[in-house]
Every structure is written in C-alpha cells, then in structure tokens.
Length: 421
Image (cartoon, helix red, strand yellow):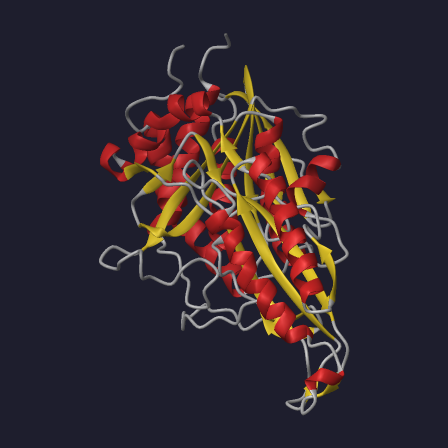
C-alpha cells in the first residue's frame, strides 16, 4: 500500500504553525490559569465553542456534559478523520511558580483541593484549537472532512457520574460522522522537548480501579483478642497481593501492575476499628491477564481475610475501566514519515509500553487510531528526573505546543490528501 505521509514538512504546515504560535501559547496559558475538573469544564468548553464559531463552524455543545464537537468540510471530496483533545484538569495544588499558575480550588470527594492542569490537557486543547484554525483557513483546498473532538473527563468522571470518551461515543459522536481514522496526542514528561514517541500496536495499558473493604470487629487497642483486627488483615492482603504479578502472572510477554493507592481505617491510636478500606489500580495489556488478575485479587482478599477471621466486600474492578490503547499498526507505520517530517527522523522514537492509561482507547476500538507523545521536558533537564505528569511541579515546555501543532497538522493533511483506494 502507498504511504500516506510526505517525507518533508508541508509548506502550509510551516506557515500555519508560525502564524499561530503566539495564539496557541496564549490559549494554553489562559486555560492553565483556569483549570476545571472532569465534567465541570464549562469555561474551557465555552472558550472552545466560541473559537470554533469564529472559524465559521457550527459546534455542538453539552455532549457528555461539557464536550464540544464540530465538523469542518473541505472543498474537495476525501476521507473523514477525527482529532481529539481532552480538557479536564486534576485535583492537584500547583507548585510550579509560573506567572500563570493556577490558584483555583474545588471540592473533590468531599475535600477542598487545588485544581491544576498537571497532565498537560491545557496544551492539548490549545494545540487542537490551533489545528482547527489552520485547517479552516485551508478549507477550500482541503480534501475530506474533519471532526474536532474536545472531550471532558479523560481522567475519569466524578463518583456516581458517567463521562469521558465512552460517554461521548454513547451519545453518538461517531454515529453521524463515522471517521476513517482518529488521531490524538499527549504531552509527556519522559520525552525531551523536540521528541515524539509512538509505537504501533499496544501503547498504553488498560486501567481498572478496585475497592476492598475489610470488615473486622472493633475493640480496645489494649485487648486485640476482644475483636477482629481489620488493619492486620488489610496489611496481609496488601502483602500477599504482591505475589499476583510476581508469581502468578506471566510478565515475560507483557507487563502488569497491581498497586494500592490508599488505605483508610481507624480514627484513634487506641481503638482497633471495625473496618479498613483499600483502593488501588490494575494495569494490563492483555484481556485474559486482565480477567485473571481480577479473579486472583478477589481470591486473595477473601481468603486472607478469612484466615484472620475477617470478611471482605471486594469490588474488583469497582467500575468500568479503560481498555488498552492500541495504535493501528498499518496506520502508524504509514504515518511515521509525517511525524519524522516535522520533528526530524532522529527525534521520533519508538516509545516503550506505557503503564499509564488513556480513554482515547475507546475511540481506537471503533476506528483505526494513532496516538502519539510529544516531549514536554526542556532540553538540558533529564526527563527521567523531571516532574512527571500528575506532579504539582509538572510543566510543559512551550516548544511542545509548536511541535504538537505541526505534527497533528502534517498527519491530518497527509491522511486526507491520500487518494481513496
């Protein structure tokens, strides 16, 4: 099959990126200073919708709570493509010291917390706003159609709410506009500014949450024999659960992770409590391994607790998680020259499997997809020790905005300009 991509950066891409650079930086800084949690991205969505209207597009709003979409029709026939950016921030108190740092706060799970774009979604929104403006300026010469998807709640919706990519699909964004491919990007701390990371096949892990409540019987701390200690039972469950990956899962082919993220139980030093709650995450790249770990963790929790005379309420998983993010191998191979054209061949690397998760995976289950990483760590700083995504010190080197814009434009134009088979 012929390659989609050109080996040199398109002049139209270079012109558009240069013209839009200052705008994209301003958009990113404004969005960074006004972050909003998942399903609460009202200001961001309004900013996006107003921008799309200014380009002569007709955005649809309120999709999956706060999502925004718009279709750009080119002047010539051609394929259909979807481009996605996520809009939500995280419950993190910013510590970057930037002049446009967030001072926003919100209530999250009953607690007041800072709100920060600690994962770079501010950059994603600004880049896609720039891509939309660039493509709208080329619409008469453009082949095909482009669906812009500005998505809420990628980090997960609030408890007891639906949201994110799965909800946008359930509400029909691919029903009336079925794309031939979908593209997305993510700024990432483990890559140097100027680098792009991509791989065909599995890219990011499936992500599942679990909740295990260990139920004992409360007693005075001075006479533990008078009750059943759920703290000791919970500690034993945590320790034994480490053998699920180290001894029961074949990780010679694909990795897996079981991590406990929080332990909640007890209120006073001399009271053994009634119960302890354990929550955590499971990351996998294979559906069979995923199901086996669910069963193994439930088994460990129930039997270890029983050995202590305790009981458990194990919800493994406790909700619908994200599937594996899979890049279509043929599409990724055919568009690799697009990424090399804008970054340079030496700056496009095959990224290793990433244990992080992305709900972009839902789009990739519907149509061929390519998702790639754009380096966010400034040159001269070691990406392995730089503040990572989700850190209160995380920042995006603003040169990543320019590279992300060029990469998304180049891949889009290269795909759309391919003659239909």
